[in-house]
Length: 476
View (spheres, rainbow, N blue to C red):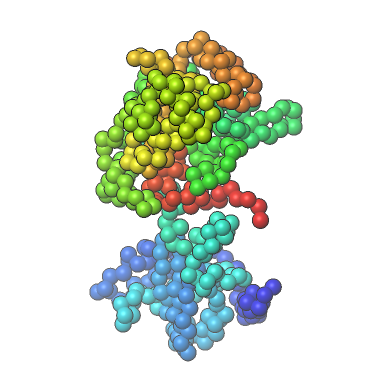
């Protein structure tokens, strides 16, 4: 225990000696600090308020003291005066420290400098802090420590609290948007006997009672499609997915995805829904369509650009999808594998290296190679391409959508062609999903939106760790 912690511990003991419980009790009828501020009327005296908060600054002056307290809605000044609270309480106020949580009762007034203040006639110690807040409340700045001690990050950095409250607001908006359009929210298994719906390395666990291996889901897709077969025509899930892969500013092994399926729609219907959802969300949050992300300005105004995979590959990659020799040359030039992969996979690797980084304003990339879209209907104009789009904003993939394959025989064929390839995760085919398709699944559009990345864009945070309360970190 260092000397500062010892000083706090000593104050804790002295509070108890005075008969004051330093970890408080129920504190009824308190207002949020924001509502306290909003209740002030200049023409009225004796506006009584009751608030709680953590002490962020302290300025003692003889027989008076000024404190700032903060809750999750804001900050307000508190004025404690010997004559108002009495000698016993005033002496107790000298045992308060930065970081302590207190309740305050009093009346509102403005100081000579115009600062709204609670003139306390009583206060209650609700929680004694035994550790000193970082840098005298100037905020926790060490990024690694901020992520490890998010609880400190939240109460010392108001902009961090604002980000996560905005995240909650965004999720509420998405649910309301979908509910109004007739979608129902469902829950599907997070532990699955066969991980499917995406190409990713899963986390493996073991169920002792059944003596079987299970996988944390990499996507909910195949279960949501089973619900389409069952007759639930508009379903969505805001779910946690788990992928046993790398960590970066854009990737966390545990992340949030919103995935939905709409019977009798297709990927063009999903484009319309995606554009409407995100543009209305931007307007709701900011009142305009231009937003800042990092050092860039992004114009989110509809309509968004739509261009095919092949068009963009030719425009920015400088190579045609139809020119296999050109694709091989480009792959070698970029240092990519070109001998053991099919044309679609090779073209997609070139696309990732030459096109993605230029897609700053929202862009729908349409019609990907069928070979990399095993769950997707092919395009009527050319079966080499699939009815799939990906949405890019600020060079990040934000959404992925298909016109869902509902031909059971074609799906069976594609699963078996995939077996033994890089896309084959476990060597198992989900036979039950194929059985479901044989009963008949309506044509449908499917959509997945990466919630964490979308929130990065909408809150101007360039690292995914800034929008996940408790990101995965390497142990100390």
